[in-house]
Length: 180
Image 1 (spheres, rainbow, N blue to C red):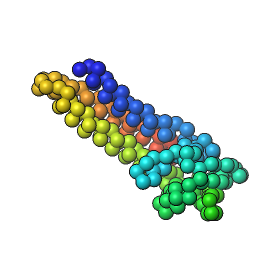
Image 2 (cartoon, one colour):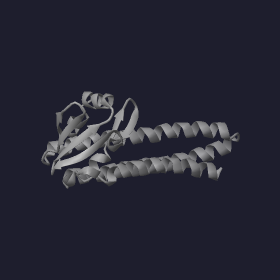
Image 3 (cartoon, rainbow, N blue to C red):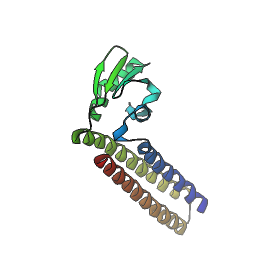
Image 4 (cartoon, rainbow, N blue to C red):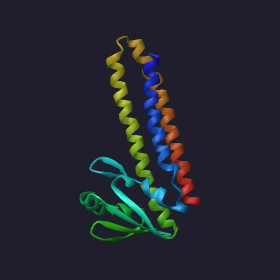
């Protein structure tokens, strides 16, 4: 029973760790290759790190060239205004984009914050979906009503703690984005 609880908690903590890692290399004052490479983008319900779908080269201090292998992904990215939603300016070519990072402004910071809020909501939903799966597994794996109640109580307590940590991490990083 304890092994079951521990394994499920580890799954949820891994989700929290992934969320924290998405903020780890982000510095709004110093948006560079590393930050751009680690931007996450969702295309057709699949999540990609930008460096997986394109090659990024620095042209000037705030200008980068993005070379895409797959033109379909480029078209989908353009259609969903991914870079514009961040507040970046883009110039389009056939197989690449020129990305210009604007000066730091409140509007630019708020655009970045909107993207990270979407990221936060995605991970919150991921935790909730895992919670539902875990509760179903509990009912399937444990026959005794007392065992089911004990495991559910412990799992729910841990889920509340993980959601609280997720929220605190988002608030801390949001404050950092707005005030750096």
